[in-house]
Image 1 (cartoon, rainbow, N blue to C red):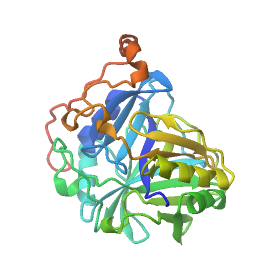
Image 2 (image 1 turned 45 degrees about the vertical axis):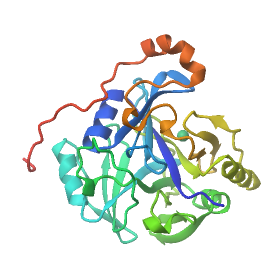
Image 3 (image 1 turned 90 degrees about the vertical axis):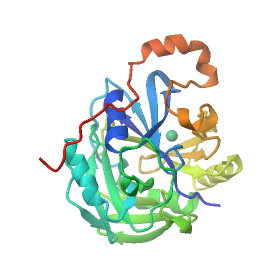
Length: 328
Ligand code: ZN
């Protein structure tokens, strides 16, 4: 069985507070988990998503204060795409402007309208208007009216010097199928994507063919990796075996507390992960308390005092803002 699509996307930010304020206050995503980078405990790992951080909505960040801004280029994921309900793009363009951001012009890809903008660290986000967006549990605390809320990921765009070597990973190991090309953009869709949700549950991977683009420089605003869904350990083992069969070199299974992960570097340079849907973010917090306190994996609890002392302080609740009406 193939993957059903994206599980989560992990990116790099600079300042954790700027990151929290933007994703909660401007985009209306719930901070569902406040934890640390298990490989670098002096750094937060912040997770945003729908009310539960459901697979297909989870965007996560490592805020590294010392990090210089990255430079987009070949060999990385250069944008993430969220689904929104058709008719919502003008709402979003106005909202972004209201908060001082500069959305780009609405573009069209494969017949869908797309609103591009960048987050405070320069990471590219594209809102794609769809008629039948995926249904996720909405966050009751979101400042966004229900009809305009982000409906999880539609997909990602990878920018690569060569399409084929990475396309093979998508089609032969992960079960994606090629659905079309528009200019330099090649679209792949997870073949197991749920038809009930218009097939749009984090199911798209676009490869932007940029033969002459120079290699990216990793930094703040860069996307570190993208993770694909496995239903459980057996499904993950099966996908891992397929990855090995096509000649790639996945890691062993690593316990990430909220899911179990396998990583591998694709031929085009993008880091892929395969993550299990279980146990999810309610593993160590109840739904109403998600994200509200610093969670540590059990193997790091004994070092809590030392870890907390090393982390910058953050404010998780949204500041009261006076909404400016109109475009001013
Ligand atoms: Zn990950």
